[in-house]
Amino acid sequence: MKHILVPVDFSEHSAYALEAAAGIAKQQNADITIIHMLGISEAVIAEEELLEYEEAKYFMGLAKKKFKPFLDKPYLKGITIHKIVQNYKVFSELNNVAKEQNIDLIVMGSHGSTGFNEIFIGSNTEKVVRNSDVPVLVIKEQKSNFTIKNILFACSFSEDMVMAYKNVKLMAQKFSAKLKLVYINTPYQDFLSSQEADDRMAKFMSKAGDTQTTVEIYNDRSVENGILNFSKTEKFDLLALPTHGRKGLSHFLLGSIGEDIANHARLPVMTFKI
Image 1 (cartoon, rainbow, N blue to C red):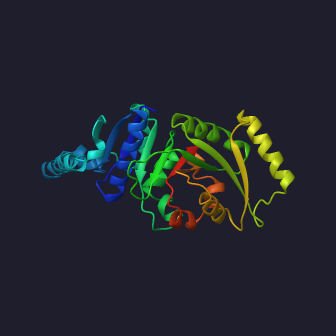
Image 2 (cartoon, helix red, strand yellow):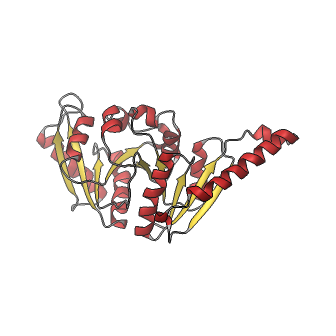
Image 3 (cartoon, helix red, strand yellow):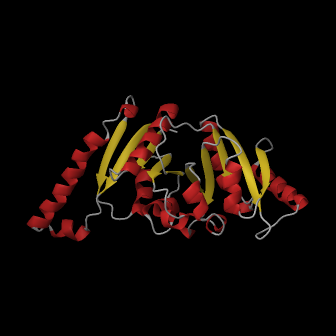
């Protein structure tokens, strides 16, 4: 991992994202590119009417000035920082920036006190997750000296998640982190007998070409409760989840993991595109 992208709006939560990104950058000897998106109307710039054009230049300059105090942090010492101020109006355009800059990971801050759908659906974070071809790490609270040593990947073990799992495994290898997979077995949704679960997991791991990673089956009344409860059984640093890209978050995620994960799971969440 050589290049991390951090979108910032100079808020407390984007500062949390930057601090977490700094921890990763130090571990991986990576650069950080920070991008602030103005969202100025193209009409304002195209028309070049004096007052409106001057206003656009003013906000561009103001954003650049804000970088200095925002980046004056001891945890950034020794890290190469690149700054971008762009007139992107929609966060989906960050995927283009990620491609242009050869980004390996996007780190974003997000409020952790609202529901899961409110965090992701219709929000800037969800737009990035939906469009990003690279993993997206969502940070909900301050993580000083952030390290990734123990990863939990919640998975339904369906075939379309094999590639996401392979990418999670590569990420774990980059951090020399332990990786554990968990299937949450519920009585009301997609219940599997022990034999059915073993067969599905064996088929999944065979397609993934992996026989070493620890796989667990955890029984609970709901997927969200299962993930919350299982994540407390060990000291996990990261919860990894699959997404369906432009189709939106996977049915596994939206159909099962609700507000409880967003409200109560304090783990950082990293999404991987299926």
